[in-house]
Length: 92
Image (tube, rainbow, N blue to C red; front, side):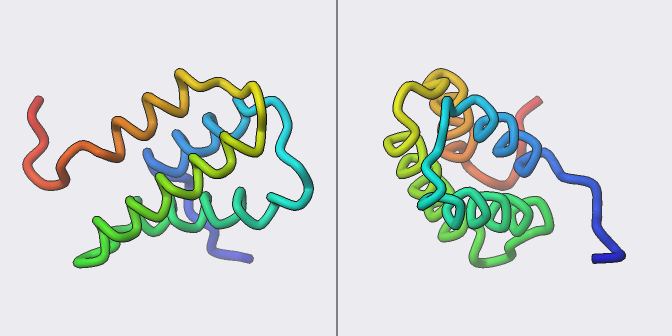
């Protein structure tokens, strides 16, 4: 793909989380790809589907964490907490 954008905040966080998983079965490669696609969608403004995309991403990451065995559960918990926070006016 010629016009590939730099990863956004959510996609970068998902990539770090996926890297922290010990090992994911080749049977779950589709879930890792789906995680990246959903993260990219959130970074690029999912519009009215933001909540649904975030829920699907959380669900997909949880399935990967369960499949991956002893992954970095703290990193996954941090990412899930970040995705669970309300979208809109960010408090600084």
